[in-house]
Length: 136
Image 1 (cartoon, rainbow, N blue to C red):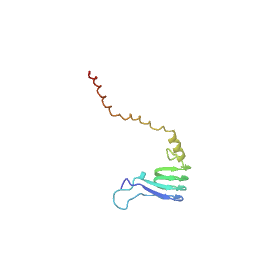
Image 2 (image 1 turned 135 degrees about the horizontal axis):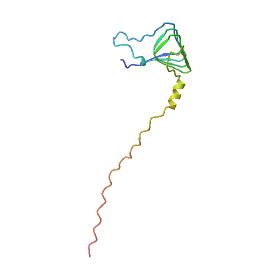
Image 3 (image 1 turned 180 degrees about the vertical axis):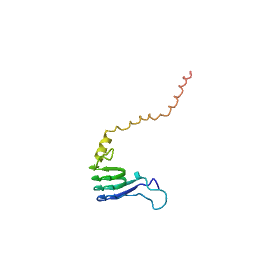
Image 4 (image 1 turned 30 degrees about the vertical axis):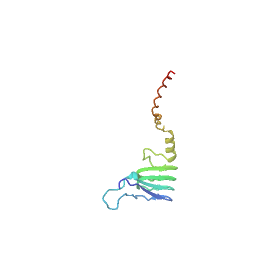
């Protein structure tokens, strides 16, 4: 299913040696590989991508991410402490603390207007006045 989400949990560190490429493939069903944004690498320690290594998906890292020369990620990289990139190969890099600060500065969407008070049912009509007393 192209909408499936894959979370790969690594309870230590993840190291890709130089030149290693992680491919995303199905088991021969012919439906195509998973969507890169639906693959999450949750690493509790650090991540190192060796020179020329290629990883696909989103990295959520508990410590730091180190990119070797010409290493690539097709996806996103989020680290608790820092991301080391040789030669500034990525346009924008944020760590989780920076993301939290950006979100804190982002104004919240305006609140919806208050709902009108519920309308009460109409009051019953007043009873007609009493007839005048009859003469004796």
